[in-house]
Length: 406
Image (tube, rainbow, N blue to C red; front, side, top):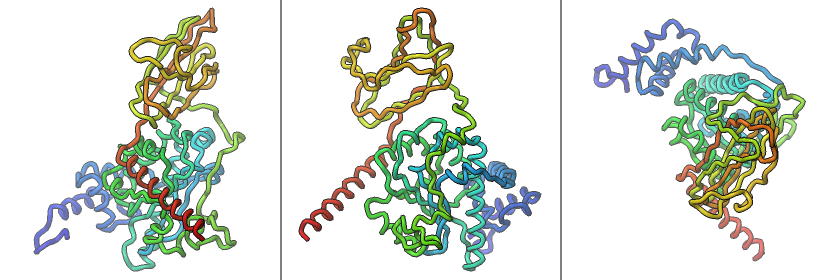
């Protein structure tokens, strides 16, 4: 397509120029063919300067070799099987992932290096498949299992690292995604997606497919049952008969505290305030509709601080704690020793008040550094999840009626 009717297309010229510009690093790249180089050009809309900067960055990163007992044991996910056209399948298990435990046990760079190594491993599998099948295999299938997605997965430092991870994938492995299937997505999914979608390319967003109640049958349209682990509706097992294929897929789990090398991460806070001795300070946040999430982080200087969350019963006027509905009971936190963080699913619309309480201290004022965010769902995927929930309910009702009739 780059050469048509004897004429050289502009894209062919750019490809040739790009190849000349990266000639010095070409031998060290995973592949040198036109198809591989075109991926980098397409990922940066055929901007030669940006494409070259991108490929040189991946060249420096690709020298990674990494191993960590904690990450190998508790970083969930793995590559297992191939789709019906021979493309490798990668499973990411979100619910069993312990972001706080991992980041308390290893560095952020260790986390990113392991994921980069996983991507390199998948590229090696693609190269092997290309040779074995005699055709180009340069994409992967990803299956995201969101069962068990909870508020702990919205912990800000963990989300920030995951955003960095997605940016790394988009930058270093352009156009490598064939399909991205989401299975067992809970009501929290639209909020989690809304937090990271800005980092995803338009091409990646288009390849996202949320499967509903019949996800096992739907997966088998793309992947032969013999290539799907038994725990995901197929017939594939480990050689010892393990239906979870744990020789290829790490199931994750909570990281035991014995592996922790730190009990906090350095944070940057967006705001600060002083709470005078014997007084309190209140922060108000308007929640327009149920289901939004309040997320906060704070630290105090010098001593502990009281903290609680309330819902106002009257709008437009200041209310004391006793006049409001208590949503999260007030208690004292040693936030001067370990920063405090938390999330709250807002079941009602209204004005929520985060209250810092220093009324018990007659001697010391407290400086509070904090970040508070209101997390909103992606409306498109919220509607999709609601529709899938309704379909799932119909399937369950029909199944129950069938059993009753039998």
